[in-house]
Length: 299
Image (cartoon, rainbow, N blue to C red; front, side, top):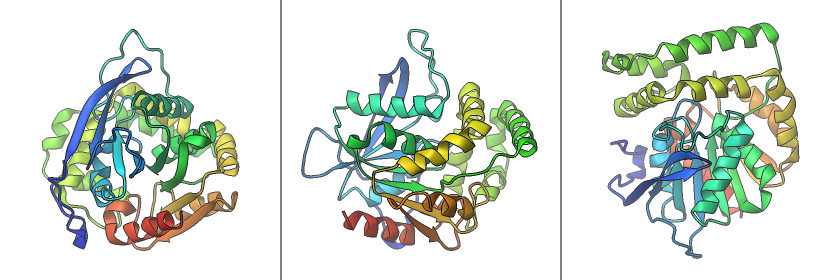
């Protein structure tokens, strides 16, 4: 667990957590309750957090703790990432289409007897969330998509990106995590403001831990010609009230991509967080929390 405070929110990181593994679609998934676990109570809704590519639910812990008074906060690691990188059970034939990850989430919620949720999702996880909301709209009250948007297809740049990504995913020796300052170098492209060293180390550890097939397979399915065609349609179809949060200096998913996505649907409300990049929830947690709490209060 991250061992730091969210700015002046003074979140207590010794707050109750409960974690376990559950087999979903033939694969063991790690999940964790931050704050109070859900056991069918009706006085407090469930918010599920979905991480981005190469990460895990760990980086959502501080945000979940800040929302723990109002929500049962469910974190989980998607198949092949973080602590859900265990071998498949019964020779599962699950692939790496984002629709399959959305189906994994539906199966997880069903297994935990959760009929309806709020969603807070980031980057590739936000793409999974958008698909989930369109497949199962009755299961979602409201959604927050952080660092998401639509992009245009460019064959040369996509081909180069796929080749580079394959090399990066293949060359991930575990000893990298022991190199001095390597975690800061690794995170530099994702950030406008630095994060505590422990948090950056956890990002690097998760990247090194990710299963090769999942890491490279999701690159191919989420950054593709097909994705540029179907993902705008997912945004257009959204019926769930959605807050789209973009980082002003995000190099991974530039805010212009978020602006284009927000124009496609009146149900999508855009908020650009100044002086942040690809992790606004950690780079400026105070203002991030203000933005999402205002959105949630409107409900």
